[in-house]
Length: 306
Image 1 (tube, helix red, strand yellow):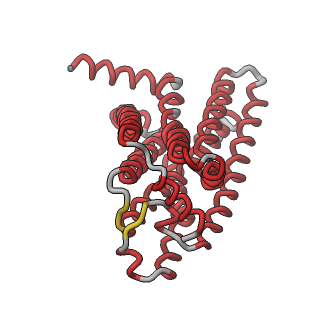
Image 2 (tube, rainbow, N blue to C red):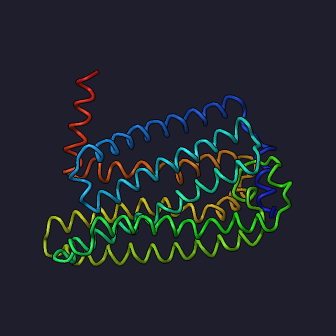
């Protein structure tokens, strides 16, 4: 285990929250996650009940994003609650939960980049959109997103299996990425991977935004809407990509505010892991006319049956 991860755990233990504060934080996290997942379930139900969305790559990518957000939020909330209740868990269990959470976390910016490219093709290459953005290619693209995330995260497990004694996996730890996969080479690999993700995904976002921006000068209503959608994706991506800067941010906060480090962790968790998952329903559940119409019908029918 590297020095920074040991220090983080030590500070969190030394300055643990009072019982009232711990309960308040857990209640806030659980209420937010249940509320957002309830909205996400409504979005998923709307998608499943109307075949029109099955044939549109944009909505397929959106469906994947929402499902991925649900997985990510559920796992991170579970880990958050475990950190306050059980405190330390078996390394094997921690590793499985951490791997799944990392897969879902790294999927999000890749999915957003793909959605930005789809918007770009729809606006800037409308005659070729049907040929390029097919349902089959969209499903293949989703598969590639998962493969890319796995290739980024699974080496952590393989390196740990190769370098740690068998007894390590039967021990109990405070469940963090650094404690589940403690080899220092993993930290270096993570930093390099995150920089690559930042550069590639932001290049995609900026390129698609400016191409759509120039197209929007023709006063196309669809182009202007797509440009605004890219801006929202960019904001959502900015929050999601904060995950990649989180290790550096945590180190800085630990040095600056060691006695309020647990509060800093909580604030960062809400901003980085919860808030981005609230933007997807706004982009498609509220702004998209076609999806909004069917979602409104679903909600009204649900209210009338109660």
